Image (cartoon, rainbow, N blue to C red):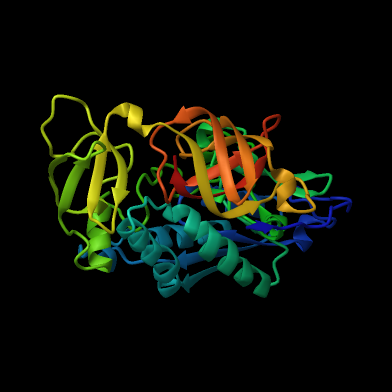
Length: 384
């Protein structure tokens, strides 16, 4: 568990990024993925007069990842980022981070599935490659800050920077940034946090960006066809080992062709005939078992967490947070729900109302009940 504190910022600000100097004297590294959002950030900051440097990380090769020759969308994204940088007149660097990305994100992705959990590679990427490694690159380039196209808000509070939900709730990405430390938050900037997506696209057109009509990515970046099983099998040969599908009452219902094909809460595609609707309740990877049961068996009220990151109010020690009323989001697509933090023999969340489909490997993200502030979060280890 980490509780990372930073001193309050009382400096007078002279520019939109919060620095006490004019934009021309403020160097910004813009993380450019080749998409609309990050492109608008780079172009918008350049138009405001900032000293902008665009950096794109080459993270993967689709041909190597999914064994599909010619499927090199990563290459197209890099090309798009370079075109945008050229069009707005900023220097642009492409850094080869394939080995780092494979180790920190793709290998973890495969191992998490093999352990019977459901990974969130976007959080791991933000936690390691983007907000740790890229932050170091930006510092080496003499940048005052690192700007990204995430839809979150960074607000200066009485005790330093705070992370808040985006103004456009439908685009909010705070779930994927819960592991951001306060030290990182002090260096990061999110210029799109107050804007709806429609306005960002309008800005892209106004700025004449070639990517203005580029569709948003819907898949995990290194799983372009949505078939994550093939990626896991490629990284971990033999991952698709068969096993039993077992009812919570102990009955063997049938066989499956690999635990990695299932996730907690899944109903369709179980491959068993039964007179009642059944859902995946649990995955027992060591025994290669998929545990199924009725919908009632999905509901949980207590979640055990690991690797918790707290970026809320300052506390003398973590025990002071025991009984803290929060809102918690257990899936990126769900609204935060009322809960209590329990801190003592580990970190736990007690939900006021049972939640379904709470899967180990996903995140439980904490929000303040009276505001849009993100308080932190942790990885779900188990649920009961």
